[in-house]
Length: 293
Length: 176
Image (cartoon, rainbow over all chains, first blue to last red; front, side, top):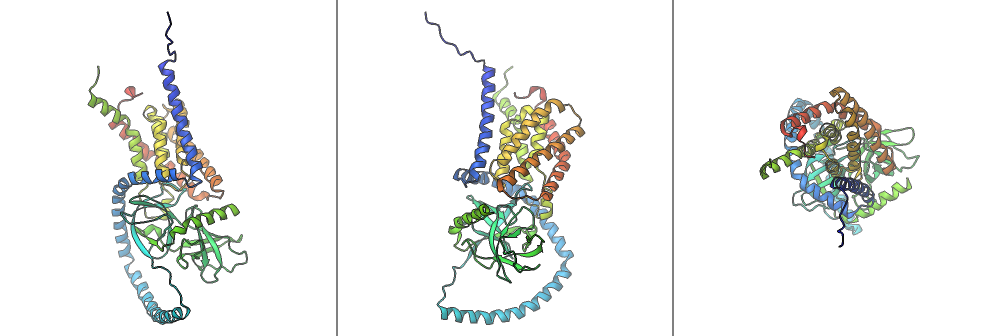
């Protein structure tokens, strides 16, 4: 008579084995996630989009009381500063009137010269307004989650406040998009100093003062110089304001203060200059710079 | 005595409260503060929740729970995907080990242990991210984040303790 083989592993041990296997798999997922995020993996990106879409509505609900508190605070803050603001606006208005006349003259002159040179103007920019619904939750990253609704937004598009560039679109879901701010360590933007036309890269360092790197060592840089996009890399158009030189250190490093006051923003503008298709080039460019560094 | 299906589902869901409540807290702390300066004082809420639940109700807080919280934090961050998962799983593992010695300790001792562990975890993350980006990450902001995390611990612990006493099944009939 044949004896039946019996599985002699106790159920408890089997359960422990599978539990350990499960933990090992979780560690492996995290480990491979880190490896894949370095190569801009489609899998990580797809998972990112799905989770943002799922948690986005919850974030919108959570954000409602915060927005209400912020509005009340802003209301009283504005009232307390109303006189000073009024004086400043009167002063600015006088300067604007003078500038307006100059602009009209320059505009006519520009049109005449463009016709003479047969100049093709760049495509008109279109923009989408998006509400900020979440900020990064720790000190190691600087990003925003914005609600874009059904608008068409693409990775790499530029994100601006009313005044200046604040970042770029990193991940786009169906209704939400993740925006990397210019202060984030992942942000590298080709810029130029408006006054001297000195080129450089504005590199985020996770502080509120990004640094200007790769400038000439003998470059003429002064505090208060305006930093604008250079247009190198093809993703951002040239001439968009970003920040002001805040400090020039003895070691040659330059700290830049962003023009936009991100703390008062509730909405941002995602601008399409029709250039985002070339965004891969900028990524390669930024990676190349990192490698060179 | 065999309980009804409804009771079993209710019990199952009550055992999942630590993870769901932790996720809610994490999402709550992502809300916009509209202040760059205050943003640096944002506590590492995931770290507090994983430490608290693992230390106090370890049987209801599994490796999978730590993974889920780390996963959500990674999605809402620009750091390499997986860093927060690894960190919170490390917190889960080490706190599980610490729980053997400090489960019966007073609140102040637990807080002290948390402040030392949080320093260790944040330093690990800081070193890891610096080596990943091959760039120096300023310590000032991270130090502020560390102190706010330590300062927020009593508040989050009190809320968690209230949730535990109000909604969770008694400790002697934990799921596992």
